[in-house]
Length: 471
Image (cartoon, rainbow, N blue to C red; front, top):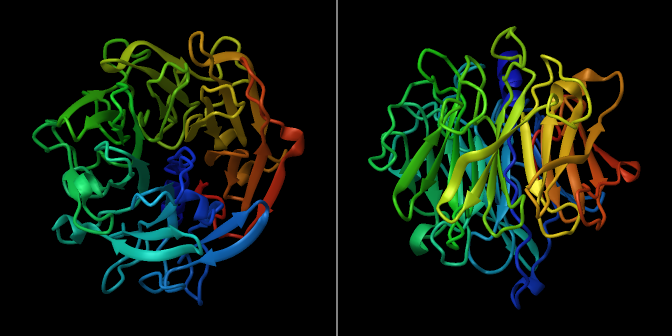
């Protein structure tokens, strides 16, 4: 895999965070899989960049997963990038947390030269009282399509889309022919490792004009934005052209049960700002109830956003995040927010290499019943965290910036983020480090984070340890 591929992987790192599974009679017998940390460039059995995923209970590593180990399918091969995406969810409805692992650069058959996009696969591991057990491998053939440079599994999310009480697996396929797509597994009682369904821009009820480089499905998230009890899907297309602005980006809210969809760009009514070239709206997505009203809200990253008259190119940007709030009729851009380091009350100064919004995670860090938002700015080696409130949602009051190691800009601290029951997890894959920042109950407009108690996990050098995290 080429150096440009490594840069693209780092720029596209996304997290899909799933709330803790509800307690039930069956769940009490489950073995907690703990924190999963991906190292997609790890060397395995001599195969460089084959990838691995390490499981932790607290700060202790309990096992390391690779392709071909523990009944996981395939064999480790050069450039597979096992661990390019991670997500947990209850996909089989037994009350235990399952784990899905993307290997977006896996090739079936004869490998192609470094730098080419992979076919991609997703490995399913089922939660049991005795730990995770291999439960099958998915690829684009499960959609009754032939393989191409699909990057199947480049993004993953979980959500109950059909209201049956278990999660569906949502798989981003951004390299799919004609602009990308999103695969759904487990809908309407189907097996999570069985035949899936596909949403593309050409899907009749989506009704968009695709572009070959749109990357529809590069980021995915699930949330109940209209409060009807079923989740909808947010789908990022950061390469989407908006008018004559290449790569301005967009995101789509899709309801596969109602067969309805709507697309948002920075030119949509109510959205602050304007669509500009290389903004990359929709490169990252995270859903959470920031105002505690029972409707999920959506944060959408714009890591290429320039906040002055100068925009140097597609890998640069001060970065920003749009936040849209859920209502009875679903998400609305009316009253939406635009957060950056220039927002009133936000600490710090923006830089054109910050790329704020390159990673997003939402969850209740301070225990007051509404979600906080963590926004990675790996170019600034930092994570900006905003507290949610019941009186208007996210606030700049008591905002907190958590910094990585001073003098180590190559760490890419903030390239991945996740919210877990213990606090905030921050990946610094350039350094092979993951930082666990604990949180405590603190009601009001406080994040609840306690950076002084942070603990660091380290992985193999050059393996992009911390590229993706879930737990």
